[in-house]
Image (cartoon, rainbow, N blue to C red):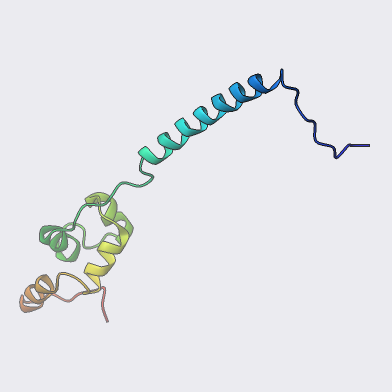
Length: 107
C-alpha cells in the first residue's frame, strides 16, 4: 500500500533541496524569457492603397483571400475587409467610376 505521509527532510538534506530547487527555478525562468521574447506570429504590415488596387483589379484579383494575403504579407482579414468594401472606400469609388469594373466579391 502507498503511504500518504509526507516525508519531512532532515536538516542535512535541506541545503541540497534548496540548491536543486534554485537550479530548477533558474531553468524555468530562462524558458519563460525565451518563450516571451519570440513572438508567435509576426505583426502584419499595414495595407497600402497599392496593395488594395492589386487585390481588387490587379494581378491578385483572381487569387483567394488567403493566397493574396500570403503574397503581400498581409492577413486574411485585411484582404477580406478590402474586397468587401469595408476599407479603402476611396479606391472602390475610383474603380466604380472607371468603365467596366464590377467588384466580384460583393453582390
